[in-house]
Length: 73
Image (cartoon, rainbow, N blue to C red):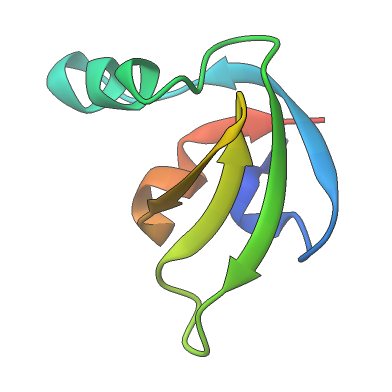
């Protein structure tokens, strides 16, 4: 399993599955990160948190813990 946290800067990945439960999963889905969405990793902070991504035409910063819950290919 490869998570969004493992994708390198400048690479694009497709979301396969969202792990997590309840409000955390709902918040990720509300941000536009759903199954099948293409996610481009734009920047990663020096300590790895947060990760800036581009999804569905807008830029978004997510925590490393949330990025680990997003399975990609």
